[in-house]
Structure formats: C-alpha cells, structure tokens
Image (cartoon, rainbow, N blue to C red; front, side, top):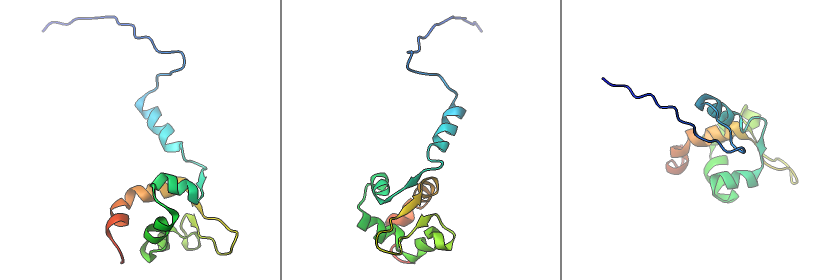
Length: 109
C-alpha cells in the first residue's frame, strides 16, 4: 500500500470560525435555553394560525394534561382577559418534535 502525504492550506474567512461537531450540537441545544415564546412566536415555529394550534395542540385533553402549567406542564394558559399565552421554548420545541405524528393524525383520545 502506498501513502501520499499532502500539506494543504484551506483559508477560513475572517468572519467564520471552525468548531467541532460536538460544540455545534451543544450550541444548538442551548439556543432556546431561557427563552419563552408567546403565541405569535409559536405560530411562526409551527407555521399555523393560533386557532389551528389551539384546536389541534393546546385544547385537546390528551395534550393539555401534559402542557398546562397548572398540571405540571410548561404552557401558561391565560385565565383572564389581558393575560397572554406563554410557552417554555425548549420544552415546547421538544414536545412538538416528539408528538408530530399525534398532532397530525389523532383527533380524540
């Protein structure tokens, strides 16, 4: 077997950095830490209207019992006029990813 040793210089632009895959994954994981979404933020993430989100994610009992902060979840459901929805972004993002199939296929359980 033959071996060819080559020294190669690849320029990296001044506005870029080279990091390991592990570091990149950690940065992505921490991107939402300490972040809370309102309903408009959730609409942008899901790509659906607040009405659809409420009907298919927030109000079905099978999800509400997991989501509602009053039941140990990570979504604040407004109780009075003037209050706004609040979603713990990392947990809501994980919920949406893990429940994608259920959100789009199951109607009542």
